[in-house]
Image (cartoon, rainbow, N blue to C red; front, top):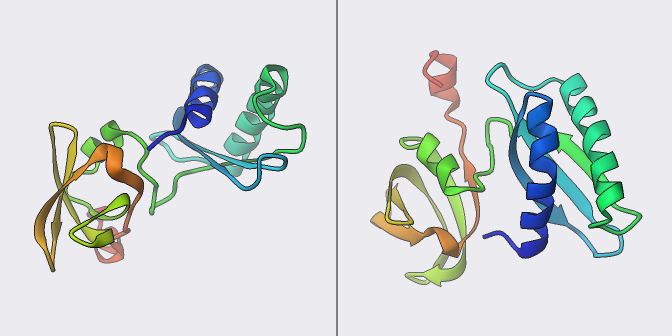
Amino acid sequence: MLNEKIRTIRELLRPSVTALGFELWGVELHGKPRSPLLRVYIDHPDGITVDDCSRVSHQISGVLDVAAVLSDTYTLEVSSPGLDRPLFELAHFERHIGQPLRIHLVIPDQGQRRYSGRLHSIREGKVVLATEQQGIINVSFDNIKSARLVPDFAAIGAGKG
């Protein structure tokens, strides 16, 4: 799920983000190598403000420039993971058991690359998803290209989310 460059960037940025009092939720790298977009997600139990993103952006842009892990023309975007948060690590999945989820696979399973359902459990490095069409499916964490929570606005409005 993580390529080596993203792993390197994540480990490079984690101490700076943590020192500012935030959790480094995840890192995405998009676009062309000469002008990539680096999206950094930060989280905090009290939520994330625009000022928080600005502080983190200022701090980590210096770290990135000194480390020179990206081209000189990268774009940095720092944000909250939001309600439809992407899940990057197995620990993220464990924290959201019982919630609706969409996953996109690297290698198709049962002829499909995309599944939606409720995150049932995590077992031996596999994400167990309860779907309406296929029932319970087990997906290897290593085969997940991307995963996002699906906000349950009815539960949020009722104070359950």
